[in-house]
Length: 302
Figure 1 (cartoon, rainbow, N blue to C red):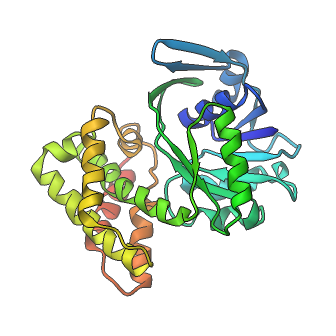
Figure 2 (cartoon, rainbow, N blue to C red; figure 1 turned 135 degrees about the vertical axis):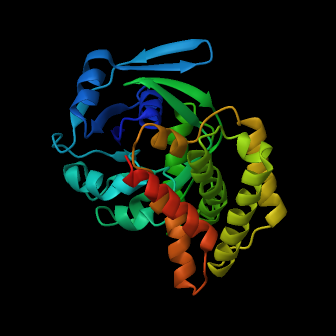
């Protein structure tokens, strides 16, 4: 299969390199420095004590003119429209797009370029750290869950086989929107709070005042999910967040890393979307609105 990885950060490089063992993979990025480095040095993956190098043919956004079988979208979700429009030549009527990005409404942006029947969405528990351009360290592994929002299970199973062959533990969900909601509770709490308080993930549970904010944001988001047709148990959701703080708490969230490096975050696709959904259902969401405005304020200070 011919695959284009759009977005050459840690996750794009990690998934692309693993998939390149049995597929033809090219890399697309908007930064010339990244393209030059990948073409000259390739990709180095560090997994425990193991280190492997991979060839990484890379192209500046918009410069690759052929179409591909699969586009793996690994830019920040807030950059989707720009990335997709710059690389329209990648798509033909059969091209599949897979997104494991955080946030809501991603499929609506992708469907401007390919049919909804050709879109795979999902999330992954895998987390990587970028040590340098093309140098990626696996922080923690985990399951990747895929699905189709238009019930194209055959397509989702195709994605599962592809990822399994590359060594990824992958499952297919019959209700991927529920999976996206489950993932959202973690992202709308730990991501912005670690960024706001400049702390590791574990501190969100260890510090009782930050944990009180976690509970407030999570419970408010539970109410929005309920209005959207999805019921979750509050205690189970908080236990899930607590377990992440305990088991993976030594690491830093993506939003913490973005703010630290003065990069724009995905806050609009996370808490921003919760606020929008709440507005749609005529509900106030002051906790989500607070962290949305707080992170946006920090971004304006860069």
